[in-house]
Image 1 (cartoon, rainbow, N blue to C red):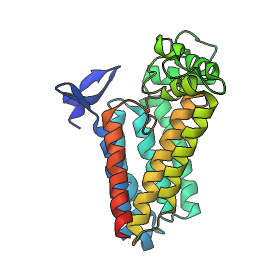
Image 2: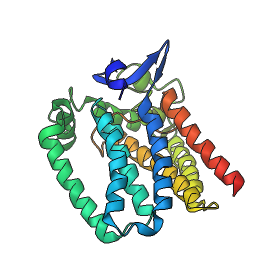
Image 3: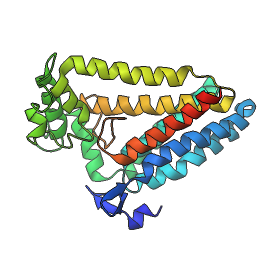
Image 4: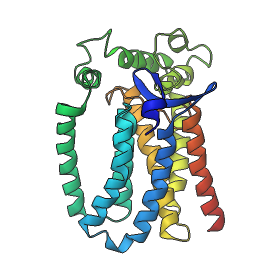
Length: 276
Protein backbone atom coordinates (compact mmCIF):
# COMPACT_ATOMS: atom_id res chain seq x y z
CA UNK A 1 0.00 0.00 0.00
CA UNK A 2 2.83 2.40 0.86
CA UNK A 3 4.30 2.22 -2.65
CA UNK A 4 1.19 4.00 -3.98
CA UNK A 5 2.17 7.10 -1.98
CA UNK A 6 5.92 6.83 -1.43
CA UNK A 7 7.00 4.93 -4.54
CA UNK A 8 8.93 6.33 -7.48
CA UNK A 9 6.76 6.88 -10.57
CA UNK A 10 8.25 5.41 -13.72
CA UNK A 11 6.49 5.01 -17.08
CA UNK A 12 3.26 6.16 -15.45
CA UNK A 13 3.31 3.55 -12.66
CA UNK A 14 4.24 3.88 -9.00
CA UNK A 15 5.59 0.36 -8.45
CA UNK A 16 9.05 0.82 -6.96
CA UNK A 17 10.68 2.12 -3.83
CA UNK A 18 13.94 3.90 -4.65
CA UNK A 19 16.50 3.02 -1.98
CA UNK A 20 19.64 5.02 -2.76
CA UNK A 21 20.58 3.60 -6.19
CA UNK A 22 18.46 0.46 -5.90
CA UNK A 23 14.83 -0.11 -6.82
CA UNK A 24 12.61 -2.45 -4.82
CA UNK A 25 9.36 -3.72 -6.34
CA UNK A 26 7.03 -5.09 -3.62
CA UNK A 27 4.73 -6.86 -6.10
CA UNK A 28 7.46 -9.37 -7.00
CA UNK A 29 7.86 -10.49 -3.38
CA UNK A 30 4.07 -10.52 -2.92
CA UNK A 31 3.78 -13.24 -5.57
CA UNK A 32 6.03 -15.59 -3.59
CA UNK A 33 4.26 -14.74 -0.33
CA UNK A 34 0.89 -15.49 -1.92
CA UNK A 35 2.12 -18.93 -3.04
CA UNK A 36 3.13 -19.58 0.57
CA UNK A 37 -0.17 -18.25 1.94
CA UNK A 38 -2.37 -20.20 -0.47
CA UNK A 39 -0.36 -23.37 0.14
CA UNK A 40 -0.97 -23.07 3.89
CA UNK A 41 -4.65 -22.22 3.41
CA UNK A 42 -5.39 -25.11 1.04
CA UNK A 43 -3.45 -27.50 3.30
CA UNK A 44 -5.77 -26.71 6.20
CA UNK A 45 -8.92 -26.59 4.02
CA UNK A 46 -8.02 -29.51 1.78
CA UNK A 47 -11.01 -31.63 2.81
CA UNK A 48 -13.42 -28.68 2.75
CA UNK A 49 -12.88 -27.32 -0.77
CA UNK A 50 -16.31 -28.58 -1.75
CA UNK A 51 -17.68 -25.59 0.16
CA UNK A 52 -17.89 -22.49 -2.06
CA UNK A 53 -17.28 -20.29 1.00
CA UNK A 54 -13.76 -21.66 1.43
CA UNK A 55 -12.96 -20.98 -2.23
CA UNK A 56 -14.40 -17.47 -1.95
CA UNK A 57 -12.29 -16.77 1.14
CA UNK A 58 -9.11 -17.82 -0.64
CA UNK A 59 -10.02 -15.46 -3.49
CA UNK A 60 -10.52 -12.63 -0.98
CA UNK A 61 -6.96 -13.17 0.25
CA UNK A 62 -5.49 -12.52 -3.21
CA UNK A 63 -8.05 -9.88 -4.21
CA UNK A 64 -6.59 -7.29 -1.83
CA UNK A 65 -3.01 -7.37 -3.24
CA UNK A 66 -4.38 -7.69 -6.80
CA UNK A 67 -6.37 -4.46 -6.36
CA UNK A 68 -3.42 -2.65 -4.77
CA UNK A 69 -1.13 -3.70 -7.63
CA UNK A 70 -3.74 -2.69 -10.23
CA UNK A 71 -3.94 0.77 -8.63
CA UNK A 72 -0.21 1.39 -9.23
CA UNK A 73 -1.20 0.72 -12.11
CA UNK A 74 0.45 -2.61 -12.97
CA UNK A 75 -2.15 -4.66 -14.81
CA UNK A 76 0.34 -7.39 -15.74
CA UNK A 77 1.20 -8.18 -12.11
CA UNK A 78 -2.50 -8.15 -11.17
CA UNK A 79 -3.23 -10.68 -13.92
CA UNK A 80 -0.41 -12.92 -12.68
CA UNK A 81 -1.78 -12.81 -9.12
CA UNK A 82 -5.26 -13.82 -10.33
CA UNK A 83 -3.83 -16.55 -12.56
CA UNK A 84 -1.74 -17.77 -9.63
CA UNK A 85 -4.85 -18.19 -7.49
CA UNK A 86 -6.74 -19.99 -10.27
CA UNK A 87 -3.92 -22.46 -10.87
CA UNK A 88 -3.42 -23.23 -7.19
CA UNK A 89 -7.12 -23.68 -6.42
CA UNK A 90 -7.34 -26.18 -9.29
CA UNK A 91 -4.26 -28.07 -8.04
CA UNK A 92 -5.76 -28.08 -4.53
CA UNK A 93 -8.74 -30.06 -5.83
CA UNK A 94 -11.57 -27.62 -6.66
CA UNK A 95 -14.66 -29.20 -8.26
CA UNK A 96 -15.14 -28.65 -11.99
CA UNK A 97 -18.64 -27.29 -11.37
CA UNK A 98 -17.15 -24.61 -9.14
CA UNK A 99 -14.45 -23.93 -11.76
CA UNK A 100 -17.11 -23.21 -14.39
CA UNK A 101 -18.69 -20.65 -12.07
CA UNK A 102 -15.28 -19.06 -11.50
CA UNK A 103 -14.75 -18.78 -15.27
CA UNK A 104 -18.16 -17.15 -15.72
CA UNK A 105 -17.37 -14.72 -12.92
CA UNK A 106 -14.03 -13.97 -14.58
CA UNK A 107 -15.75 -13.10 -17.85
CA UNK A 108 -18.11 -10.77 -16.02
CA UNK A 109 -15.25 -9.10 -14.13
CA UNK A 110 -13.27 -8.66 -17.37
CA UNK A 111 -16.23 -6.93 -19.01
CA UNK A 112 -16.73 -4.70 -15.98
CA UNK A 113 -13.02 -3.84 -15.92
CA UNK A 114 -13.09 -2.90 -19.61
CA UNK A 115 -16.01 -0.55 -19.11
CA UNK A 116 -15.09 1.10 -15.82
CA UNK A 117 -11.58 0.22 -14.58
CA UNK A 118 -9.07 0.10 -17.43
CA UNK A 119 -7.19 3.31 -18.21
CA UNK A 120 -7.27 4.68 -21.77
CA UNK A 121 -3.70 3.60 -22.60
CA UNK A 122 -4.49 0.06 -21.40
CA UNK A 123 -7.49 -0.11 -23.72
CA UNK A 124 -5.31 1.17 -26.57
CA UNK A 125 -2.89 -1.73 -26.00
CA UNK A 126 -5.70 -4.27 -26.26
CA UNK A 127 -7.15 -2.62 -29.37
CA UNK A 128 -3.73 -2.43 -31.01
CA UNK A 129 -3.31 -6.16 -30.34
CA UNK A 130 -6.61 -6.87 -32.11
CA UNK A 131 -5.67 -4.59 -35.02
CA UNK A 132 -1.86 -4.27 -35.20
CA UNK A 133 -1.92 -2.23 -38.41
CA UNK A 134 -4.09 0.52 -36.97
CA UNK A 135 -1.17 2.36 -35.32
CA UNK A 136 2.12 0.71 -36.40
CA UNK A 137 4.30 3.60 -35.17
CA UNK A 138 2.39 4.09 -31.92
CA UNK A 139 0.62 1.46 -29.82
CA UNK A 140 1.77 -1.43 -32.06
CA UNK A 141 5.37 -0.26 -32.35
CA UNK A 142 6.82 -2.47 -29.60
CA UNK A 143 5.06 -5.58 -30.90
CA UNK A 144 6.20 -4.99 -34.48
CA UNK A 145 9.81 -4.33 -33.47
CA UNK A 146 9.81 -7.46 -31.33
CA UNK A 147 8.72 -9.59 -34.29
CA UNK A 148 11.41 -8.02 -36.48
CA UNK A 149 14.09 -8.80 -33.87
CA UNK A 150 12.92 -12.41 -33.51
CA UNK A 151 12.87 -12.91 -37.27
CA UNK A 152 16.32 -11.36 -37.68
CA UNK A 153 17.87 -14.01 -35.44
CA UNK A 154 17.25 -16.87 -37.83
CA UNK A 155 18.43 -20.32 -36.77
CA UNK A 156 21.68 -19.54 -34.95
CA UNK A 157 21.32 -15.80 -34.29
CA UNK A 158 23.61 -12.86 -34.93
CA UNK A 159 25.77 -13.53 -31.88
CA UNK A 160 25.78 -11.82 -28.50
CA UNK A 161 26.73 -8.18 -28.97
CA UNK A 162 25.82 -8.21 -32.67
CA UNK A 163 22.06 -7.95 -32.12
CA UNK A 164 21.88 -4.50 -33.70
CA UNK A 165 18.10 -4.20 -33.69
CA UNK A 166 17.97 -4.57 -29.93
CA UNK A 167 21.14 -2.67 -29.05
CA UNK A 168 20.55 0.29 -31.38
CA UNK A 169 17.32 1.24 -29.62
CA UNK A 170 14.75 0.11 -32.16
CA UNK A 171 13.28 -2.40 -29.69
CA UNK A 172 11.89 -0.69 -26.55
CA UNK A 173 12.58 -2.27 -23.13
CA UNK A 174 14.91 -4.79 -24.77
CA UNK A 175 16.46 -5.74 -21.41
CA UNK A 176 13.19 -6.27 -19.49
CA UNK A 177 9.80 -6.83 -21.14
CA UNK A 178 11.28 -7.83 -24.52
CA UNK A 179 14.35 -9.75 -23.38
CA UNK A 180 12.97 -12.80 -25.22
CA UNK A 181 13.17 -10.96 -28.56
CA UNK A 182 16.69 -9.78 -27.68
CA UNK A 183 17.73 -13.37 -26.94
CA UNK A 184 16.11 -14.60 -30.16
CA UNK A 185 18.04 -12.04 -32.21
CA UNK A 186 21.31 -12.90 -30.45
CA UNK A 187 21.07 -16.70 -30.36
CA UNK A 188 18.35 -17.54 -32.86
CA UNK A 189 16.06 -20.55 -32.77
CA UNK A 190 18.79 -22.72 -31.23
CA UNK A 191 19.05 -20.39 -28.21
CA UNK A 192 15.27 -20.34 -27.82
CA UNK A 193 15.17 -24.15 -27.77
CA UNK A 194 17.80 -24.15 -25.01
CA UNK A 195 15.76 -21.56 -23.08
CA UNK A 196 12.60 -23.66 -23.37
CA UNK A 197 14.49 -26.76 -22.24
CA UNK A 198 15.92 -25.03 -19.14
CA UNK A 199 12.58 -23.51 -18.11
CA UNK A 200 10.91 -26.86 -18.79
CA UNK A 201 13.35 -28.71 -16.53
CA UNK A 202 12.75 -26.24 -13.67
CA UNK A 203 8.95 -26.46 -13.99
CA UNK A 204 9.06 -30.27 -14.37
CA UNK A 205 11.08 -30.65 -11.16
CA UNK A 206 8.70 -28.35 -9.29
CA UNK A 207 5.52 -30.00 -10.56
CA UNK A 208 6.62 -33.59 -9.84
CA UNK A 209 7.74 -32.94 -6.24
CA UNK A 210 5.49 -34.56 -3.63
CA UNK A 211 7.34 -33.84 -0.36
CA UNK A 212 6.27 -34.96 3.08
CA UNK A 213 2.98 -33.06 3.25
CA UNK A 214 0.29 -31.47 1.15
CA UNK A 215 1.89 -28.08 1.83
CA UNK A 216 5.15 -29.23 0.21
CA UNK A 217 3.33 -30.34 -2.92
CA UNK A 218 1.18 -27.22 -3.16
CA UNK A 219 4.05 -24.77 -2.66
CA UNK A 220 6.26 -26.54 -5.19
CA UNK A 221 3.47 -26.83 -7.76
CA UNK A 222 2.40 -23.23 -7.14
CA UNK A 223 5.94 -21.97 -7.74
CA UNK A 224 6.18 -24.05 -10.91
CA UNK A 225 2.82 -22.71 -12.11
CA UNK A 226 3.94 -19.13 -11.39
CA UNK A 227 7.16 -19.52 -13.40
CA UNK A 228 5.32 -21.29 -16.23
CA UNK A 229 2.42 -18.84 -16.58
CA UNK A 230 4.59 -15.72 -16.35
CA UNK A 231 7.02 -17.10 -18.92
CA UNK A 232 4.14 -18.01 -21.25
CA UNK A 233 2.59 -14.53 -21.00
CA UNK A 234 5.92 -12.76 -21.52
CA UNK A 235 6.81 -14.91 -24.53
CA UNK A 236 3.24 -14.56 -25.88
CA UNK A 237 3.64 -10.78 -25.75
CA UNK A 238 7.00 -10.95 -27.54
CA UNK A 239 5.64 -13.06 -30.41
CA UNK A 240 2.44 -11.00 -30.77
CA UNK A 241 -0.02 -13.53 -29.34
CA UNK A 242 -1.01 -11.34 -26.34
CA UNK A 243 -1.44 -7.60 -25.67
CA UNK A 244 1.61 -5.77 -24.31
CA UNK A 245 1.82 -5.68 -20.49
CA UNK A 246 4.85 -5.03 -18.33
CA UNK A 247 5.95 -8.53 -17.27
CA UNK A 248 9.42 -9.95 -16.82
CA UNK A 249 10.69 -13.23 -18.21
CA UNK A 250 11.67 -15.33 -15.16
CA UNK A 251 15.43 -15.53 -14.50
CA UNK A 252 16.32 -13.52 -17.63
CA UNK A 253 14.80 -10.04 -17.51
CA UNK A 254 16.84 -7.30 -15.89
CA UNK A 255 15.48 -6.57 -12.42
CA UNK A 256 16.77 -7.47 -8.97
CA UNK A 257 13.39 -7.76 -7.25
CA UNK A 258 12.18 -10.39 -9.73
CA UNK A 259 15.38 -12.44 -9.57
CA UNK A 260 15.73 -12.28 -5.77
CA UNK A 261 12.09 -13.24 -5.19
CA UNK A 262 12.40 -16.21 -7.56
CA UNK A 263 15.57 -17.33 -5.80
CA UNK A 264 13.73 -17.05 -2.47
CA UNK A 265 11.00 -19.32 -3.84
CA UNK A 266 13.54 -21.85 -5.12
CA UNK A 267 15.34 -21.67 -1.77
CA UNK A 268 12.15 -22.64 0.06
CA UNK A 269 11.64 -25.49 -2.42
CA UNK A 270 15.21 -26.69 -1.85
CA UNK A 271 14.62 -26.69 1.91
CA UNK A 272 11.45 -28.76 1.47
CA UNK A 273 13.29 -31.10 -0.90
CA UNK A 274 16.19 -31.57 1.55
CA UNK A 275 13.77 -32.52 4.34
CA UNK A 276 11.68 -34.90 2.24
